[in-house]
Every structure is written in C-alpha cells, then in structure tokens.
Amino acid sequence: RKWNERLFREMHKAYMEGRAEKDPADFWYKGEIGFFDFYIIPLAKKLSECGVFGVSSDEYLNYAMMNRNEWEKKGAKIVDDMLEKMAQECAVAAADKATAAMKQEGSDST
Image (cartoon, rainbow, N blue to C red; front, side):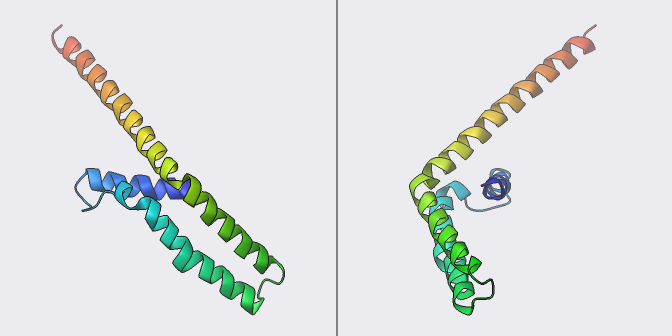
C-alpha cells in the first residue's frame, strides 16, 4: 500500500500543478483492479504454470487474488482516505505559510 500511495500522491500533485491532464482520483480504483486483472494475476498464473518458483508460485497466485479481492472491497475507501489525508496536509501547509508570512510582515514593520 505504501508504494500505491506514493505513486498516487505523485500523480495527484502533477495534476494539481497542471502537469497532468487527469486527476488520478477519477480512475485509481478501477485502474488498480485492471492492474491486478491484466498484469499481476496473469503473471502469477504464468509463474505457477512454469513452476519456476516451485510451490511458492501457487502462494504468489493466491496472494495476488487475495490482494485483488481486498482492493475491490476497500480500494474506493483507500482512495478517499488518501485524498483526505492530502487535503489535510495542504491545509496545514497553507496555515504554516500564512503564519510565516504574518511573522515576516510583523518583523518588517518594526
């Protein structure tokens, strides 16, 4: 989840700064489902079929399926939580910036 959030933050920041056309919040949940369905799970199936990792291959497929199911259940809330967390961080940063500006203004007038 850590890397998922980091990529989401990076892409959301790019959108907010005008460097990306689409807000990742609009497609993130479904995009992750697609990533599992069209990349992760097929890869885990291929690894299982070729047996390159022995019995661990079946575990990898199981974990991929479980992670996909968990994202399907919790992913929309996770996206909402990431957006809320970033909004709170922006509000704190804006308040800190305003406080610093007021302090600077006060020191300039003395």
